[in-house]
Image 1 (cartoon, rainbow, N blue to C red):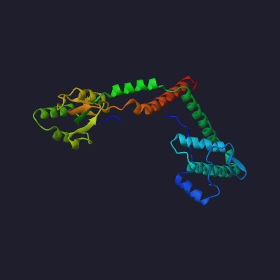
Image 2 (cartoon, rainbow, N blue to C red):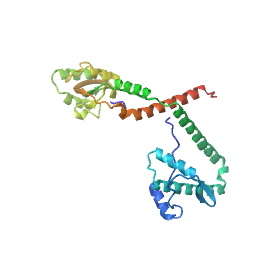
Image 3 (cartoon, helix red, strand yellow):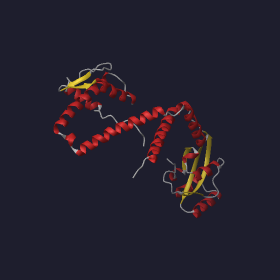
Image 4 (tube, rainbow, N blue to C red):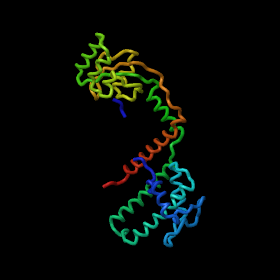
Length: 276
């Protein structure tokens, strides 16, 4: 009953903690303690090829942005990953695979993906969602939510005549919970039709509108038609809802709005592009 293309930097492909741990044990020379601070010099050399320290710094910053603690353990994992990566790159180049058309195509795709993501990040920094915009969205969502939640139950049937017959039985004193056993809703029929505490927007519009008009202990005296069939709705109780404070949801709202802004920007670029 209830109604229920983000952008982002490409995921960093790194060894899992367990894999890194086993690799550290098997290759002690490669996993010597990494520098405690960022360095402009080489991180390490693999067969004479230097791995830039700046590359490690970037990977560490990417992990930190995702919430990872920047400590010696992270630096060691990054160092180990880059050493393994360089050894694999050297082995791959010796095979000549980079000249394979299919491999080159995938390499170019990943390279361009990085450029696209960098562009979207840069665009977002230059076009941030303001606090005022987030506040407006917050107020809009609160208004849509309302300040009341309802504890309701219902009986769902396929035909209007069946719904009318149930309403007549209710009028003669039969129990709602007993009649609910005939409901088409498997999630509530064995619970007396109970739907639990919910906001009006948790239901389809026709249902929520009828529910909001009911007084406590009353049921709809005419069937309520929705896309699911015909309902008899009963309101057990209502109460004032506790809405989250602005500061509690500000970051989440801002992120969602920024993503929507990016998608709108992408749509505008595609709309202006000459696509043949």
